[in-house]
Amino acid sequence: MVIVYRALAGMNKLNVGDGVLDVPQASDFDKVADYAKEAVSALVNAKLVNGKNGLIDPLANTTRAEVAVLLKRISDY
Image 1: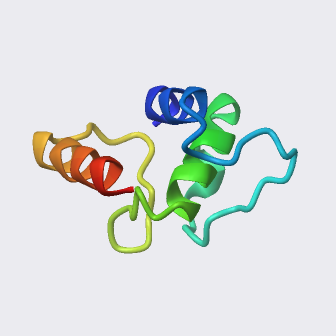
Image 2: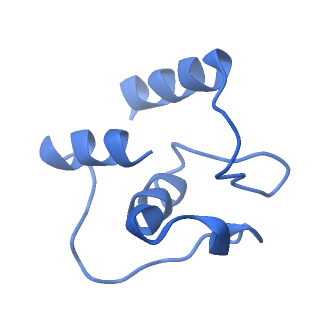
């Protein structure tokens, strides 16, 4: 998510750097690494990432299907 976030931010596609972290409602957001919290928050709030059953599950591997959905959402964004 950090790579996607930085790519979109570099193309001025996401509002970044406002210093406000809008924490997603996912109950496992505290398990997200500190360096990735801004990226995860921005992608969730932009509705590019939904998570699974109300969780972000930051320790899980990403499937090809999840990447395909993310790429489609980015292209539609």
